[in-house]
Image (cartoon, rainbow, N blue to C red; front, top):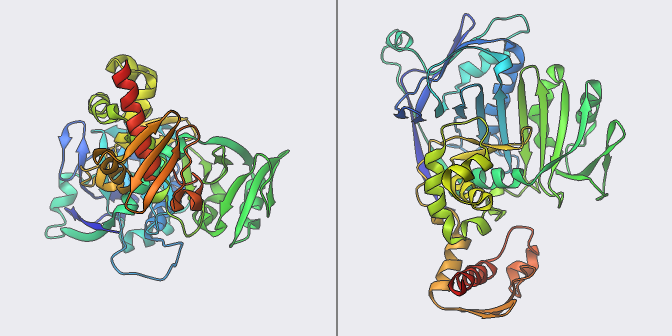
Length: 442
């Protein structure tokens, strides 16, 4: 695993003084262009206590290592915030790469002025965390995302600099999460005290399966039809402090019931946790993005679609297809490519992508997907021979037989995972060659 180094530079530390929460920003991109310290929003948060508690939850996930949770220096990362005009989205990813958190402050929770739209990092320091804990239900809260010049000049010499490692697996996880989430459906819902009883009654360890049973969610120690897999229930821990504000809890899962997502609806806001299939398993190796990235058109289409994005809160695929002059399927593949570069996320509640630009330098998509890079090397070496719906892929370890119909392979990697972590390099190589052959025959 390789790491890049991310440098955060803030004009001043974030602070909470006399009910005024000033979140310092560090670099990023806005509609107006690249910005050193963008200013996105200033106004009142109408429900201060749940907003403060949920923001603290996002920050807690950024600090957490749920697998092998011993303390490690240098793992502190600041959350990412995107202003989509009518809402603010705060995101973080756990250091172990297996938990993604997002707080959506919607228009019903905000009353103020939007200066620009875009994405940046925000400073969440130890004194700020302590102050957020103390916010009560009757306390006023004025939020500024980006400090105004007056605040900066009154804190002369208070420049804050942080340097942290950003492992490739952590960055790749952002891409995998939005693709996996786009394949999820709502599988269950609880309201009021039922949600409180359910979350507080979960075991802390092990793996359970959860399914809707009438008005309740039933927990089982084995898979049942329609159930969602929940590995490491303790990874839902940041939901617990929010239960006193929760209106409902929604559960999402894909058809194969591996990953899961858990969304608390709060007054004017939503807090969502997406969990990897196992406590020890990060999202970076899931391979969900590889098929879309392997298409020849994806890179070119991503350039076109990317130019049409304007930090919308909901990306309309049909509208993008019309404006770009390509099919909806190619738009989805382009969004996957943009997701790898950190340029789109996925909102489960609204079943729609949203535009954001992660403030990290991730220009080389291929380096973030070594399986795809190896597949393309096999193609370039002429190692793939098609035989109808089958293919033979020659490697240094011997010939591998690939079925294009079901995506199976005779390699050890496929037999270990059986497609649960995306296609192997041999299947990817065969699909690339098969697509090229179809294009030539047209």
